[in-house]
Length: 193
Image (cartoon, rainbow, N blue to C red):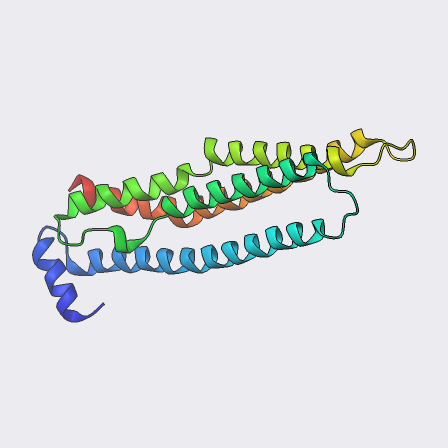
């Protein structure tokens, strides 16, 4: 942030010392930068995983309708969730730096809380659809033999997907407590002044 930008913010936010507001904005930009890097990695990982899943299907000898339906559910639910996830991310470019400090703080807090809300009901629905898609897919893949009980495959993969989702949720909540909540508290001070 240049000195001219700090002076401009100081004029708009006269009731707040420029150092305080610039520190908060710097923290918001740091969160934004880190989040964008993580999002790029997530998108690349998702593309690689889905591509390898679809590529692996080429090696199956008899692909059934259930496999296609299951993979379609997995791909569609992933695409829908990642679109929703990216749309509701906090990005500093969405903020209006030209408004008064209280309004700026309210808008930033709203955006941060919206981002936190991604890992509530929308994430749970995503995990349920991933489990559903995997189970439908395995219905078409598991041979009808007595050597392997298909129920074990369904239980094992359902539990693995649920555990992966739970682990992702724990990591996200840890990051919210560590990175986002302190920013919301700091912005709340500007909102109440």
